[in-house]
Image (cartoon, rainbow, N blue to C red):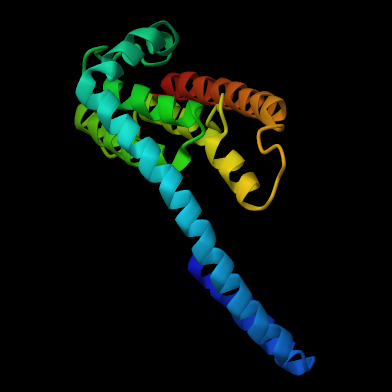
Length: 194
């Protein structure tokens, strides 16, 4: 659906540009935006590769087990039926660690692996309570260090790219709290209906 919306916007922009006689502006915008998109991709690719490698080293070195122990007191009440030493819990902690570091793109493959492990335990077509909580936590994405946002701000010339850190903490913390309250309430309500 989103592909259709974006395609419609691009085609509409081209038609409006031609009708208004601004075809030179359109062609220069195509060239400039293509060049800046490539620069942005290269900048972000470097950050993603670096942190993906660090997360891989953390997984191989056993650091993820340490993260699981650190996050266990917080995650245990949210995921009471999960084995703390299981694969699902390990991937959830790695995903949350990547999100806390502001590495949403790095967190995505870990989140997919966590959902696959949760689905193995689920055994039905309906999302389990753990799956709902995990999706909510992943989507709200509490960030302690907004690495990607800082990289984007720096690539666009910000003199202090991490000056937004306190508003990021406040907004992502509030979003996570509200999302968890709604998800936990929804899970309790759905249990009553069963």
